[in-house]
Length: 394
Image 1 (cartoon, one colour):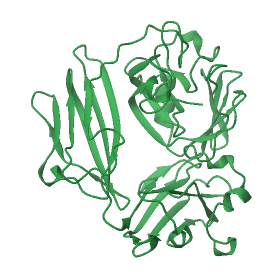
Image 2 (cartoon, rainbow, N blue to C red; image 1 turned 135 degrees about the vertical axis):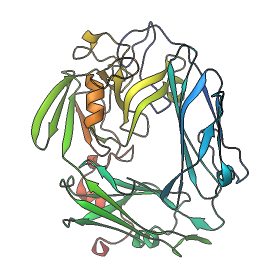
Image 3 (cartoon, rainbow, N blue to C red; image 1 turned 120 degrees about the vertical axis):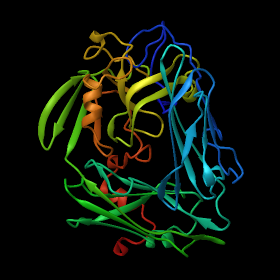
Image 4 (cartoon, helix red, strand yellow; image 1 turned 90 degrees about the vertical axis):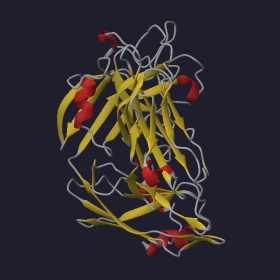
């Protein structure tokens, strides 16, 4: 079942149920154009990197480049009229074997915000492969974080590549890999991490053969730390979310979840990204022109296919805690522009990537383990069977 995405929404029109309630459909502002186009692959080093405000003006643009797993800010500036952002200096020439991410916010003539989040990748260096990892170096994460590495090329020699990756923890705990296809391997312990655990990722892939005439170039060490233990349970039947922190219930919030026609996935999902504001567009998930909202506040991604927990300002207050009307997302009450003191704003502030959101009584199937960081829905024996190496090698 299709869900919301960073450019997709579970929201609503005047005659169609949305993430919160029945609302007047909003004409998309289409404020921001990004080149290269979102999702472009094999962009050459001479490709043009540019962000344009087709209406209004750019308010903020942040571009990052990831190469060999490391992130680098791309310098650039917004023109004096606010219409265009361009990279500066040597950054005008794109780097091969890299993933670029563009986060832009623009204001239209009425002062309304619109956001775009796009990615593109440049051509790989000849005969080389690299892995892009989550979480980032020195990041503090929730106890449900699953370390995920996505490669820029299909890995044929998975056992050889797996031998070149080591994940260790202090205090010690066994961590095992599971391959999802040929381009992604995830790592997790049997149970959620203990708060305070320090996790180290050693990528020793330089010279490792991944496929005929394809070799690794990375030799890198990455650390991240596990923070406090926050877990939230969404009961779709009761329209509530109960938040437990360090073993103690701290609050129960009224929510709206997926409708009977478009129920929310059941099971454990992990917050993988957080956006203060994002655009969600129904067309990207097959719902036609039912909705297009440029400024969805306090959005937290739960699946790759587009399930989000986000703020909702277009529903009436009484919707929360009483009705499930979305296309699959979980909605918390918010205000237009994002109110930090609203239920959505406070939960967003107190949440970490890696926090677990468990959904029950939704009437939908359990989310697939490879859909986002949802590997906790797989038993330990099945998880460890997804390694390319014999069990004794771990």
